Image (cartoon, rainbow over all chains, first blue to last red; front, top):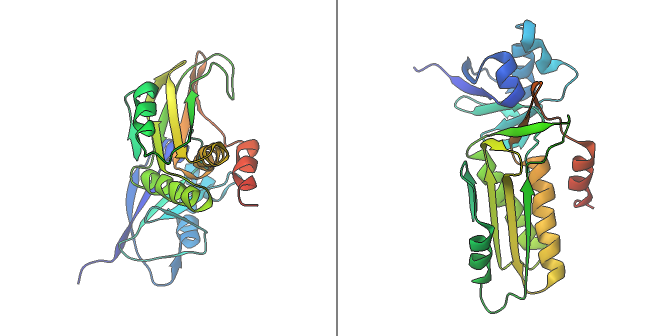
Length: 86
Length: 149
């Protein structure tokens, strides 16, 4: 049986400050994007900002979602600051 | 059609391509965004633009679909550059063909406003005294939300 994992990606300021572009995490049952964010924030240091005062946007499989959205094995979850293109 | 690219674009040839949208087109509205010398700080010398490949194209395609449901859109074109851009360079192009001007103006403005608050692009301003990530503006969010009313 293969291990159930999901991919987490970071962009822009978060990518730079966390020094991480992508990581693989175990996928748990009934886990939300918000749970994932809390788990990462508990690493401390720069990771704490994931639950800090600055808003963090979330996408699952390249579609914007709210923190209550459920994440599953094989999903690509992305965390990033509010967008500033155009 | 949507293009995310590092290279510059030619507005004249984009306009020519938009004109080739059938005899029902009576109006073309285009918008071009440029790198200017002031933003969150003064003396900006350039920008670095990052994006989320794949999601960016999906979001913009959704905006064009929404514009096509709300207004008469015969053809739409969006180009957004990424990477390092110098002062006065072109960043973004939006062009819309419609039967009448009101639809062309509205659809073009909607796509541009919604792109700014929903397409995953991030700007970093490069200046003499360093570089910093641009903060999202409340005024941009308000403009985006105004289209929901």
